[in-house]
Image (cartoon, helix red, strand yellow):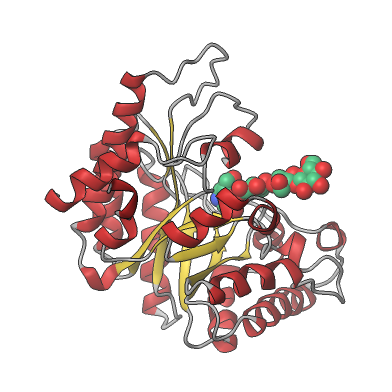
Length: 325
Ligand code: G3I
């Protein structure tokens, strides 16, 4: 029956979602999807600085370890997210005072303690997340402000701590933002030229039902041309991006969204197998989506599972479409 057919068995690359340990514990339907539908998992929040490094002299690996244990028990690959970011930084880091050397020691210690703790358990890491603004300039952050060349240094430090991990630069919204895309390509060329280990590009893919396909394709083509591995790292397709309170998720919208999912998967399947690190959805069901929680968009339906943790028509549409793609 259709329920016995899994998307993970149709695609030849790892397929996953970001997860939250509380939901894995408390919600059986959520846990079953995590277990049955995916072959790769990412921690939605619990490996970020704020949660994993709550005080200067204290790391808290409890929740991250829970996710890793679940992944090990259910035979899944783990992807690490994220070692360096401007967001979700603990207060003690924001308050930190020191010269450049002290900042470098702080960041190096953070990266190497986390990467060493999970060494051998992570297939890869988002080493640096979201460093560029839409105009291609370096995003101001604690790291950019205090550590010249922090991106290159972060990759080097991560590689020293876990030489087998596939190291990614991860970012969002490159479609229709040629300067942002170019900044990322320039970063890749610069790191490669200097012999700094970078192995992958994470394209978050927080897109909309009407995101332009030619622009998405261009981002993918340019990313593939770097020769690096490509991870669609946080895929979701918003249907109500303007947060219209009267929005109705009618069939017409749902099928346009399904076609957009088909497009993303088809395009990804065209890239060389050696560059396919996988596709990861951001959250499990519409109900858990960060777009509902974080952006407070109650009428948003961006994923493949509905509020009752049932497969949506978009799931079955992909099942039917992909074998022919
Ligand atoms: O758990 C606390 C709760 O105790 C507190 O009362 C409440 C009040 O603000 O906050 C809760 O923490 C929230 C946390 O999610 C857990 O739900 C944070 O405020 C909130 O900022 C945090 O949002 C996360 C967001 O990153 C932070 O920017 C989202 O869950 C998470 O999905 C999102 O993920 C990011 C990726 O890491 C990077 N790419 C973009 C993506 C979406 O923003």
